[in-house]
Length: 318
Ligand code: RI2
Image 1 (cartoon, rainbow, N blue to C red):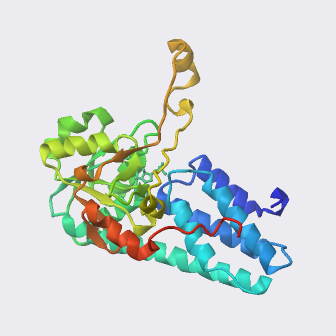
Image 2: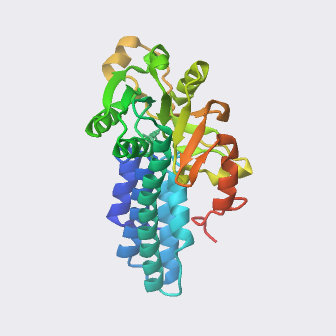
Image 3: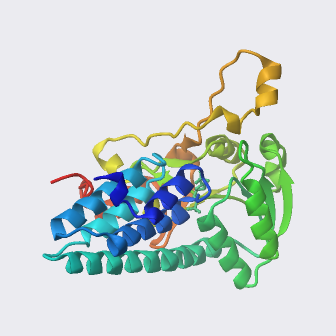
């Protein structure tokens, strides 16, 4: 596909996902679906086949922006599998309709999983959070709506300090928030009733891929017997892992870790900046989805039901 045929919205969405202006798996999926809609809407393709090829190319472009965010391929799978027809108009209409359907499901899913997660939380509980997850916050919001008072220990979450967003949003929900640096997690674990985090991807064996630092937090929580709850809509389930593929961990710029002045002052060193880590299933108590809560070891049954035995990749050229 010629880049000139790309709708400006597609370029904007891809850029915003790459720079993390749009972030969080659910928001990424929503934006990706909207980019497909924009391409279908604005395309000047003259045949159904040409428009379908454009949409596949848009999906491939989006997929390259954040390799770990499985919500991206899942959004593209959902839309492209339901897009087709013999005329440009039919393809366009089915794409627009499936995007609308996908976005509506996204919203309902988050509300439903929020209620499931809220059922685990009791009035007066203290949660510890890591990074910023709209799925995790949906659980808190539903608990607050049910009249439960919650306290939160919010981890700052280096390097991008996304805990700041969580702190602000929890405060807006009326939760009493204390922020701690990441390395203080163990020091405060005795005060915590639930560790509540989100996920960027869930593998077939129940491993949870989430913001770097989650696995260490889960190990500390297990040491103290504190339950680790992962709020993750089915959008985060990675069907490719059913056939043995590993989730790729995104490595990001060193400038997120050290600014130029710090870098110069330190001298010649290497910096590694993985965005995510993998928490093995034995450290996770429950994965909360819109289909109910699952022990991580049994999530594969839900994956089989939703995706079949293996993934088909509708963005590949036939
Ligand atoms: P929701 C974030 O990654 C965090 O790791 C968070 O737990 C996860 O996405 C899920 O977010 P990043 O996009 O979909 O900030 O629950 O790198 O909002």
